[in-house]
Length: 339
Image 1 (tube, helix red, strand yellow):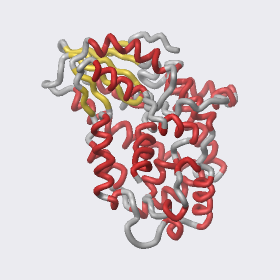
Image 2: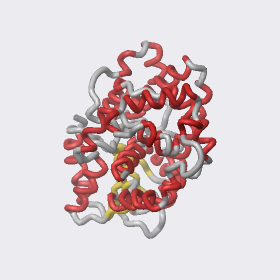
Image 3: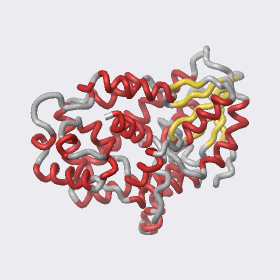
């Protein structure tokens, strides 16, 4: 079970950024019709701070260096980390979503309270889901042998937790299993070598409650619809990764959403998917960004800090950069030599 906790937690934070490094092959952006690519570019051009990975925010003798990260390995991250070293060396503190210690605390909290992620009594998913959805779920598990999760065990997992496990594509698993580090953990390691203190912006308990407090019947309803749209097409993952290293993560994000909508349209679930996307972005991005802003702008914070959080938190009206700008911070882009 400890292994499943680790996988679920990795996927949870992977959802915040271009997470699926080491997934190679065709790029979904290349296969889209020219008109769709133009429409995506037009949408992205209208999103504040959609281009760039590294930013400087300044206000009242304080400065924040903000880097949009990816959470799992890619060999190209070495080039980015080298360019971040001077910013770490001159900082007073590093802020992450969760530190390594806080991630471990998150896992131990779940182990102490299995009711947060298990169906403790009554029917399992095999009885609560429709026969069609349960069949699709068992087929999906068969296609993901790296999880080592038989249907009888999966049937006792709450949908929010099972959904995190299912969201991890096979091409992401090996690098995580080998203990390779994404940009966040590489930055944390580099900070430790500089004796730079690090802290988390998320509260582990609040983060767990955000996922696990939804009533089981609502989770079942969402899984009933969502499992029919489950797809591990690596081309959308490649689009996310490559757009990140092109310095415009939002392009890959929009491509991924477009592919989801295309699948949903075939089954009449477009409205449901749009509502789920809006709720996910609100809970995972908007709410947390606002809480992070309140934490970062407290008067007792250090004069110079580095903020390393998932790339999806940076752009948009409710993105961290725009929230800082609305709070009176001067925002400027820092050039990177992208690999």
